[in-house]
Image (cartoon, rainbow, N blue to C red):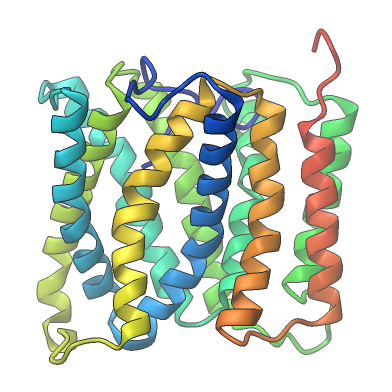
Length: 316
């Protein structure tokens, strides 16, 4: 699910926080939720790559969201919240589906062309893009000197990590382009949800956007009927699909909304710093993805840039 982004470059709650028995005001519970979200999101790019290795991206996403919907509905019942269906709510679901449907479609298309490490580092630059959108389109904030420095380091990090400094680009240009479009749609979806301002419970927003995205994937399937899976996937692919449906689509978002109401934005920025690093570890360990020296340099520069971007001068 995509959610509004505040002036710090972080999503903000759509309405009141999720209240659940496992949501305790303790440091241990908060730390556990933080670690869980980081682990889930760092493995999500790899799950996309594993899915498209055997299953066409459209069918992979259709299966993923088909599994996610009953889980989301179970969460609705557990938290005892309803799914509003008034026009503004439907518009908010459509705005969220821009990230779950359009962004994920481009992400999975690109996942067959680039490694998971590249996907993670491109999505890691999303806070920079959201900040620029807030400045130049919505004119809702101004960058501090630290944030401009962070933006410069982050863009330089992308330049090296994607191998743009090499004479012969080893990565698939089209795949990189698809992932950049996916990241831009992710950011755009967040701003769209905020613009609609439907004030919907986060779990309801997640469920509504998931159902609307599933309908979108259903409309795509007739164009890819010849690519319909005709045999059971391997264990790795099956695990990737179930993991994406249960953890990436539902559990991580519930925990993340709870963290938004407990920790500072600068603490949440640690997710953007840690996730690409861990995703690189998972990609090299579990998927045997090769790392170049300029990718490591780019990853380091991106993390430094995100750290600078998280710094805000008091009063700004």
